[in-house]
Image (cartoon, rainbow, N blue to C red; front, top):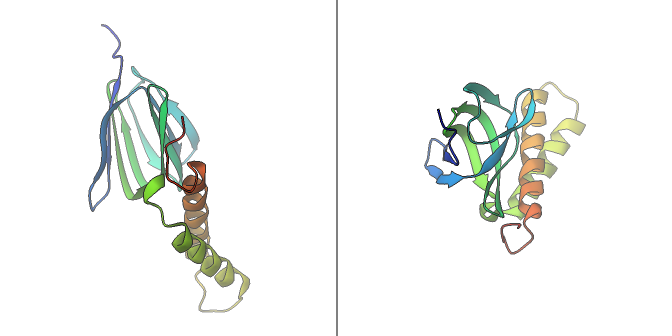
Length: 144
């Protein structure tokens, strides 16, 4: 059996299909750590963590911030089902900075009304969004 030369990538959130493209490789933030996928990868179902996902077509990489969900990896297809996913150029850095500040403030204030786990996840999500947005520069140009 001949190995596929590309991966049919689909990235889906509850609101929309964020990507449906033929790609050469991708890196996924799995619950056990980041892992790469090339055409012909062994079948796998992986839990996603908050992190940066990227995919490459030729020499162009596209970066996304993802949070919570699953990845289904097949030799010729990858489907990402994420609760939250944003392309770098769609991230509002000011909003992400405000979310980071709110989460940090919640973590600094001891009290019975603070859900520390939720604040930690909010902080991680905000930091990833900021990193992904900054990874492509202020103009939202995809890195090459």
